Image 1 (tube, rainbow, N blue to C red):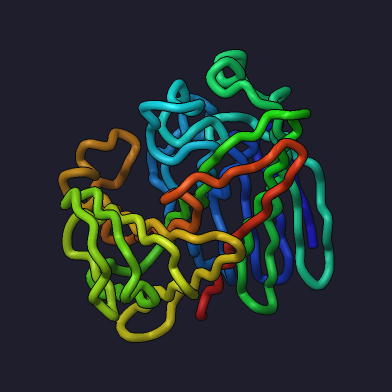
Image 2: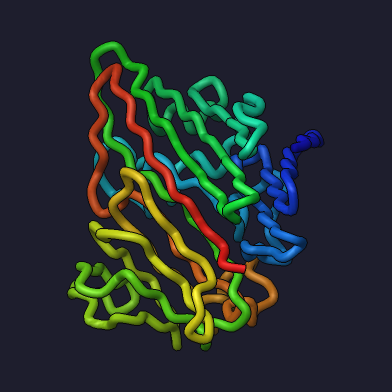
Length: 287
């Protein structure tokens, strides 16, 4: 295992696997196995801290989307975790897996973010690479460090998976799951055993019971499992939406990505003063 650092990134290598993480947002930018990239990153993604990264695995906390009321209503879309510079805490495991941690608390936030969400909290983000099993695990611990004040939060690992061609992708594990569909502005229960993408997709699948599989040409490609996380967002911008996103390039890049996002976003997680929540996702590559 080796860890290399620059002012802006931390790169971990173990065996044939390598992961690069941007300190800004603690955003995983790249995950390669034998040199093959597993994540999609926009060619025009901003990596200078001027805005959230388009691609990789941005972190959404403490709100999903944009609230119009309640304690998170002053926050921008998706909160501040992806637009704050995290503290690198070091490695916690070297063999047989490599694990490193990042931390975020009020002391790391901008003055504006502190005013927008005035709570004392600690986030510990652990990224674990298992080269033997070809997995990447991202895990978050959320602690309410208030003395007597509870808070609610959403959390999401906004994962952009790289695929060879979206037309050949089938997503399984979502059948019979309730859906909130943001494109059709409707709610229904998923009927398809295999979910495919042939236009813009933006759906929140609620209380998904098990693993979500991404198959390519009827073969296992990537599998996403969750621990203590209820929901899965599936997103692909397709043609028109991609054209409207300035930092989404190439514009035909939607052919080579699909977001399978593990999170708790359909309902608020309620955390009492002094309590801690922990959950995560594990992505397995079938090479």
